[in-house]
Length: 169
Image 1: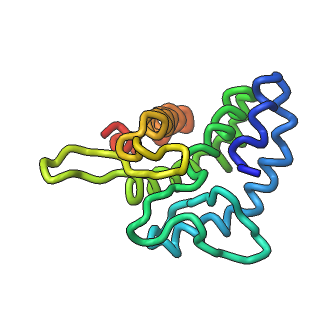
Image 2: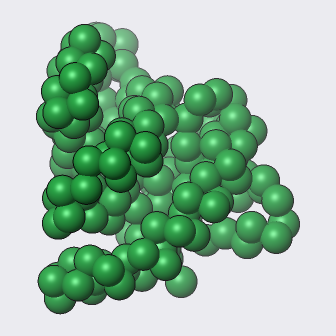
């Protein structure tokens, strides 16, 4: 299945506790996701494949040089943001969500954003359902905006607001 969709019902039903198995699994697999990004040349970032088999180790199955299919990396993080928004758990924010979103911010900057010959900033990303709108796809743009806004808000909540200038641009 696609990991980003597996737990959307936990939030729409008002039962965020149903998200705990996904949260535990993702936390356990975080080293694979970080190694996956490193295999793609993006150290310190996180890259989540669309489908993955962790028993096969760190296989970069979603992106190779010259290919910008981003897997589930942007999409899956909505769930983690929603979990914090539903629970308000500051320990979760400090120990898991904020560091994970920072790693996602690195990935966005290195993989999803590029400048054209005029210097205009664009987003890259191609998923089978996005064919024909892979450049500046509105769903990807909205998720990038969400991540940047939450990084700014959460850095202020945690008292590390000095980091926000990076996400404001």
